Length: 267
Image 1: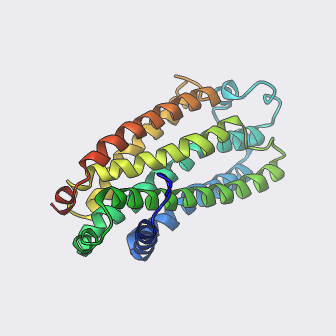
Image 2 (image 1 turned 180 degrees about the vertical axis):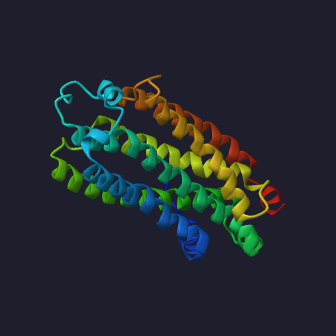
Image 3 (image 1 turned 135 degrees about the vertical axis):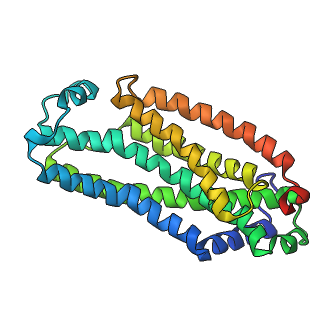
């Protein structure tokens, strides 16, 4: 059997975890409501505002113009505002999806399992602790990636319709390519590893999930930094950030996998 193939027992654990996460009301609410609000409701809300507010009331255009790529300065006020929505504000909302969904699913899978009293039974199965860890992590990652992919599809529909209304360039560019292919998956894995790391110190699912709120702050600060003029996010910088997160993921995985023991899970 290949080193990277999954045994039937591991697949059963993944299926069980995905089912339990989905049937847990708080976790299911996070998986559905959070991506929906961040990638559909908010973009639609801002798009409607851009369409309704008179152009002369849309302030701060001088600063926004300085952030536009060369060749887009000829757009009108509404077009500029919508373009910035799709390429400055929405990426921040989008990246919160893999991070928050992965931590929610991992909190339910690891801490929630202990709360439900099913962890002891799971440890008595013939699945080794190493395989159990791999299966539970993979299940959380797959759930988060699925939620992230569907979120992007819905967001792309909103932006495509909005772009047709305002006659703006298509929103998808190299920045979004890096976000979708590298940064979002690496943040998904980071969210799961972070939750496993703190699961031993969390007494409940809610406590564990609340602790995950701190890891969203760097994303907010990263994108807010653009508006202050400190730096300009581009595909190269996002690629470098993605590589840094991937390296951090590898380090965390090796550390967490070694500390993942039955004693730590049950305490």
